[in-house]
Length: 456
Ligand SMILES: *Cc1c(COP(=O)(O)O)cnc(C)c1O
View 1 (cartoon, rainbow, N blue to C red):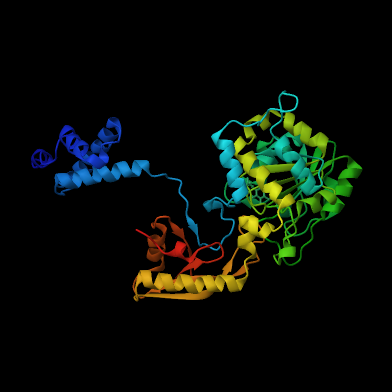
View 2 (cartoon, helix red, strand yellow):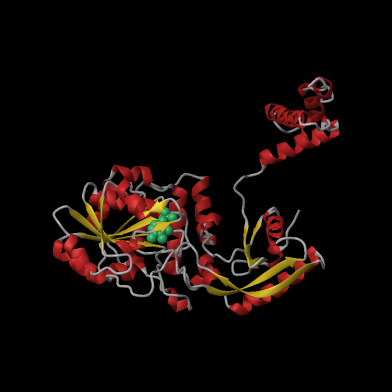
């Protein structure tokens, strides 16, 4: 205790350090208040160190630490990363990457005013969804469409509009949880609807739905199981059967499709995912899906369906709280236009491009990346191209993987976790995955092999 004041005197005062920092030409442009804050933070840290028996850093070191503190203030927390995880639509990495067309539309909308809610013909007030509604109708065969912040919001808005205070019948096999926060029973409860679960976990029949229908029933709901599959002795009611039952009882049949594809991925050699147009054709009155999953657009939730039902959703005050901004709508419109006009969608839409790359292309990329990495890391690291299994991600086809290639990096004494950390702290961060004690850099979403070489 008695040594403390003397040791603390070894540190410069705030004013003294401030003068030294301000004398550095390279730091002169920072606002004075910010520099003062940095100087205080650096001195606080040094004081804590002294309290714990450390020694006082030299003044030059304190100046450098202040410079580093200031540089951190200028660094975005949200940064681009290299996705070598092998998961094409990775929720933690922001799901779909936008097409060049969508980025251009978004940038233009961001930088200047736009006709978001202005009808340029009449000069009157317009409806923001109109910019994408016709496209969505053309692509899905639905009569109307609305767009909100994400699919969770679309489900919430649809159920609140259609079933507040009334019953929603759903199979026990479809009461899904999609990543911690989104659980169908919880969203249903928040919408004001009353859950009426029918059937069993593995088998639900049409008669189960039929028996549950009563005077309080409003909606028959189907939910895409997304991130799990029930296999073995199973039975589920097909959408067309449920639609028939709904029609007989004048009930709304709604489907939460989750990912939802606008085109048949099987045509590209990928596993079949339900196509929105197909679900509309089979008789769903309302279909909800995400815009940033297989669709390949910005984060948004889309509701398509019967015009009268969508109109009620638009009039719901909740819609105001859940609506999208102009940036999202601009990016979504450009993405949807590609589906209509692109001569080569797999070239123009990054999600589809990553999903459909031939294995030979990944193999060639892997050989180049391995050579670059071996040179950068040195001979102590074992670097080789291996077979890998990539995933679509975001709940599409959880049990099916896409054949892929990866660069595997191992070291006799450095753990896979430590190697992963080194790549993650590169600039930009490189996100791989660990499998069987190997650090893997999957090539499916990598354009240029040089992206995989860690820097700094
Ligand atoms: C992903 C998913 C959601 C949530 O969608 P967000 O766009 O992330 O809000 C809801 N339902 C299903 C079936 C899903 O797969």
